[in-house]
Length: 176
Image (cartoon, rainbow, N blue to C red; front, side, top):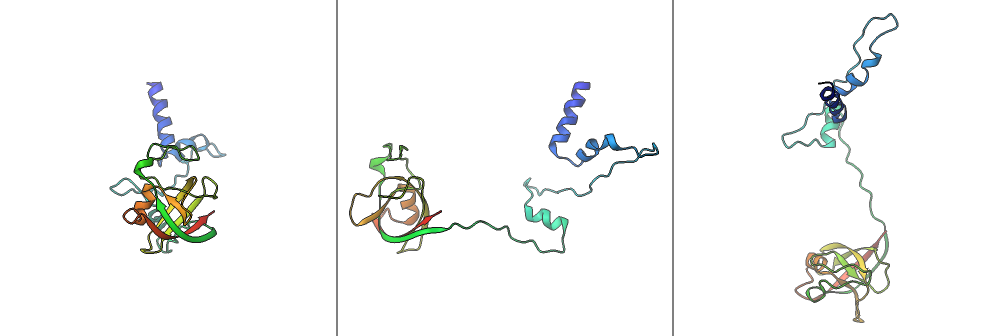
């Protein structure tokens, strides 16, 4: 029985329930005069919706309903370098082969080949014809056609709408 109670108390403490402050402060429940005083318990409890999740905005509104909720700031990426050119894509004939970085090329990946950018560089590619964008990671060398600036893997080419035409005019933005 004692072991069950200890494990139960530990589970209650670790679960972050409203009773955790009561159990944690029970050793300091007496005053100087020797009178017992109930420990202070927070009455703020987060209520979850039917889906089992509570958003940060909901919690902020519960704590201070009169104040508007400020949007969470998302760090923006810094563009280091930008240039334009022709993009092509490579796919089914190269699946399973190793790229210049040593990775295996798989269908649907958002990777690309560039002649000089370091492996792991993130590049935002924009198709100039339709405005679609895709973020790719450089993991291979190429293209080996002189008029092209980047070779896209299958996933990125599908996202940009390059697979049907084979090539497209693109804008590349190197992201830090």
